[in-house]
Image (cartoon, rainbow, N blue to C red; front, side, top):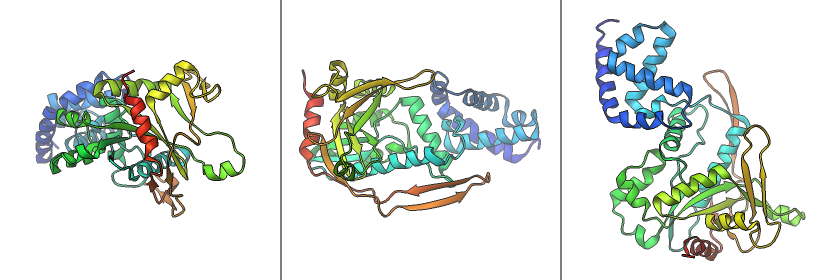
Length: 348
């Protein structure tokens, strides 16, 4: 293998990619959530740059060498996010919850709200098993969370502001879910009207209401509150929460939630509940009743056109999942959104 032209070409590509991506690796290394395997991958990349790909591959056994070679090739192709671990292509309840969440985001972003333009913002974590871009999707999600923290799922602009954006600025915005933000992007983000967190509740509330079922709620964990507060401080843009059920959509401002937590209630005693998850390091959560007035803002088309699929992965694992369709929402009461935005931005 010595003197292989493939190694020479790969080394050139690695050195060029590293020169551009080294600052991102530096950010990864100080991230509290960086995994030991990811830290080891960073060490391998740095060694391949300083001592050469041929040396790093040749001094280990064949299996480890092949793994290192794959890492270097992916680093050249994808950049720093190639060092991140994406785990197995999971199925079952984990994947179904991700796909439900993806449906909810797409349903909310499809709503036509007069005077407001909604766009996807946060990266999607609902990677489809067996798809060629599965690893790229998952590692992009993880890279953004490690470097920037949690972004809101969607972002909204005043329609008058949106019309002032050039076609190149709109292309930048459309690419946001797929990449890290740059200083140029930050300027556009600060011109947004609000960020939107989207939650899914797997109920058809009309049926539940007719059956005499109890109230529904949107749940927020303390760790989410911290990340949302940090994003609001950094951008100066407020956050609204949307709760998508299988038939209805609700909206509540994050500021209203924060005030309700301090007060112990939203409108009346009992409409806010707080507790702690069981198990080691249990996380504190808060539930806010959102059913009915004044927070119902829209309707969701029931995903009756959904289709199921069963796939056999390269590993031999079999996963079954549902592609939820259609993802379509209508804004039946835009005043709910306007009122929550006004509450979120009031000075007192």
